[in-house]
Length: 233
Image (cartoon, one colour):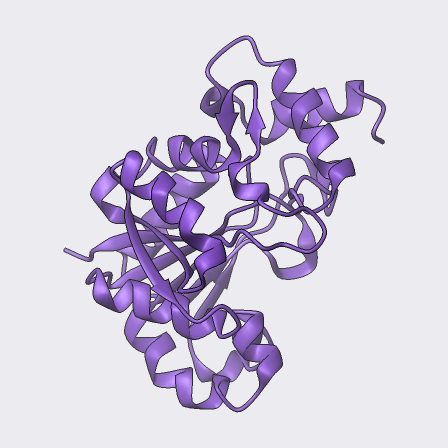
């Protein structure tokens, strides 16, 4: 049985929106929304927060410890290596990459992509190619051994080290890749739902304020309808 786990990449010192992972929306930090969505698909012990070994990221570690979530500390700049090491340390055969500013990961899609990984057929599974899904709903799953084997090539470029999976998109011949495309709500393609700026935070707050059920019960179609109603399109 393949062990599939999630590596949530988070840091505190974002230049555009400092401390964004721990900013509270309706009394709950952003990263809690992310973890709660992930826990609809993955057991808690298969989720790890990967942050840096800088003092500035101590608040993220405190959150992990207080929430009984596993964590890994590594290089701030070399995010690819941090991601890879977190997956290896936790014995993941496949690692799901989720960013700490992706508040609205779609549960249905996450389940479908996890099933694809469980088949063992693919080295890399992604819904990012061509941006048919909103930014902030990105999901990537990579076979740990495959990623580890590519690490020597990834380490030759600062750009690849910072942008974890960029090498995989630019070198598709290196493995068996599978891409998921949004055919259900194509009008949502590429809209900004990732939490990167104060403006993004306002949109996230507005969307969440419209929820009347637990936030993880809202899917891509419903979130887009709220986004549309708020006149962001």
